[in-house]
Image (cartoon, rainbow, N blue to C red):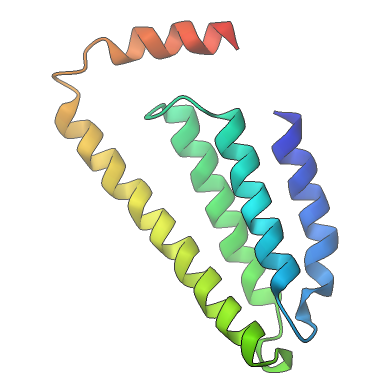
Length: 122
């Protein structure tokens, strides 16, 4: 659990400088944050994983408007729009996955106990 938090703290410091000509570092930071969360919360369809990814995407939605879009060069503006769309798409995907899971809950009655065992193992 320390890895995502450290990256998030690191991300705030790095994100401040992202308003310059390009947005490459910010995109890399988002990618590394997302990868760290995915590695740590590796149990698919767990409520903890859904909640943590929701938190990650909401944090990034809040950070992105801090970038001065007008100060970005053409490539930076493209990266900004792509990153914004990626975050929105991931949030929508989370919603779709939760709805699918609700539809399958009846068939996956063992999901809860298995996830509890896995969480205890962590």
